[in-house]
Length: 246
Image 1 (cartoon, rainbow, N blue to C red):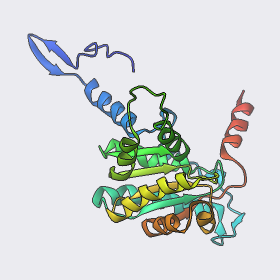
Image 2 (image 1 turned 30 degrees about the vertical axis):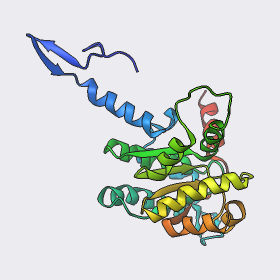
Image 3 (image 1 turned 135 degrees about the vertical axis):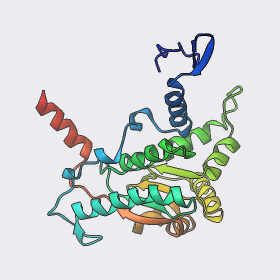
Image 4 (image 1 turned 45 degrees about the vertical axis):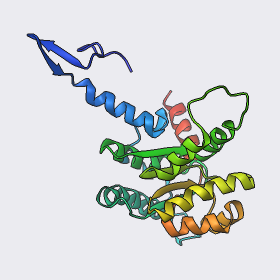
């Protein structure tokens, strides 16, 4: 973030020997809030009004729900918008499980929710599951000297934050250790009525195959399932559109 030209990052403006708060304080606080939430910088500008339904077929039917891809996207989008409002009114509202293939807009929609709530000052944590597991493993490295966090720090943050986003709970080869970490986080949150938003490319029917029955049961208990089906990776389609513009 560039230094504020008004106060030169002092946070106050001096006029006639009086100090006035600089307008940059609000933006700086918001920037820190995004950083502390763990939201990747590339997702910090995602908003609901940018969600584009043109990528979801009005003809192709989702075999799981017997509705068109477009209708399924509308349902999921509406559920995401409603969650933001419900969470502001009741911190113990049900979370969401958003399934769909790679490049279907799951992470984008999750980021829309996170950004909307961060604007309201909500304390939340947005983690990419493979990254979280890597960071947990790194705490076991005996060659690390010092460090900014411990395994306990990471687990407590994920368990206790008022709202947790678990992005890309994908079809990976989870070890028993990884399954146990995910279960521990979700079990704590179920027991303490703390909601979670989960995005995954695993269908609801196949979750137990990857995560085990205990974890899947907790997810079904705490999250309402929605699906974002697409014919082709939206990122590829967007790249093609940009190429045509050149």
